[in-house]
Amino acid sequence: MLQRQGHFDEAEKELRRSIGIDEKIGNERGLAMTLNSLGGVLQRQGHFDEAEKELRRSIGISEKLDDERGLSMVLHSLGGVLKDQGKFDEAEKELRRSIGIREKLDDERGLSMVLHSLGGMLQRQGRFEEADETFRHSIEIGERLEDKLHLAIVHHTRGKALHAWKQFEKAAAELCESFRINESLKKRRGIDIVTPVLIKTLLTLGRADEALDYCQRALKIAPTSSHLLKLRDRLTSPKKISHGTIKRVIPNRWGYLYGFITTDDGDADIYFREGYVGSVSLSDLVVGARVEVEVEHDPTGRWRATNIRLIV
Image 1 (spheres, rainbow, N blue to C red):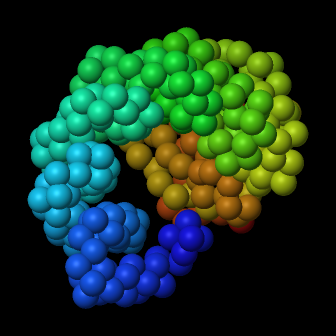
Image 2 (spheres, rainbow, N blue to C red):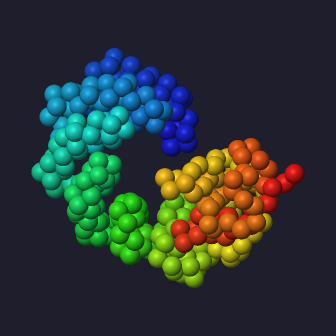
Image 3 (cartoon, helix red, strand yellow):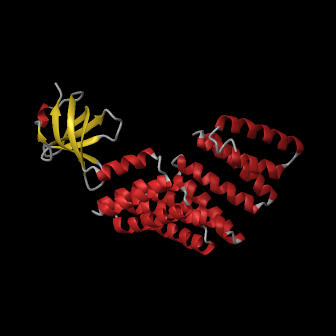
């Protein structure tokens, strides 16, 4: 409970207390489970070396007890920690070992979860085709189990991966499916997570009306979400006036200038580029200069300057 609430220091304290009790009474099965939980808390805190140490201890106990189900769970956890450390070869080894045990136990629900984790790790390594195949396998199992929450998560992850690989049509299909499931379940957090990348993908495809429709549907589930409200404002206001400060001015390899403006309202930085900006000469812009900017969103949903005026 404390871990779910984000009280990691308290959670760590209570778990270590539980470990002491398990050690005292010789409850090795309980000890292995608690060490796995402690590893998760340490991972969330960014203490990866400590997390790895506790998880490997849990693995040793599970192997000693011949507890294959418990072992498969801890191997999955260890794979995530190793991935966070950038130890991809070791992470893949542990995840595939967990997959082998899940298959042996015919644990399809657990298998679908580990496949999702493996797909994410393969994506991080740039192994796109292997990652996509792994995501599809995870989705197939989720469909067989009718596990809607899992399907919403994996369709989102696969959609993000396809977007990164510039397969925008396929990405949109996956993200729309994730949105549909989250919407049907009225999952605010899921809607909050999937909608921005879905809208970005639809705008890249030139489907602005569809992007606005999804944003409005999302706000019915999460009406007070600040970033969804900002997205809606961007989509319904093609141009606006902002004030801010020049953050960077950079010449590209052809000698044209581009850069970024930090806005006073804390919104995303505004991009500007020579040839697309009227009024002021970009050569007059220096870092720290105060400006008034007329902006519009480009096909990816990013704010782009169309006019810049120096504030003297």
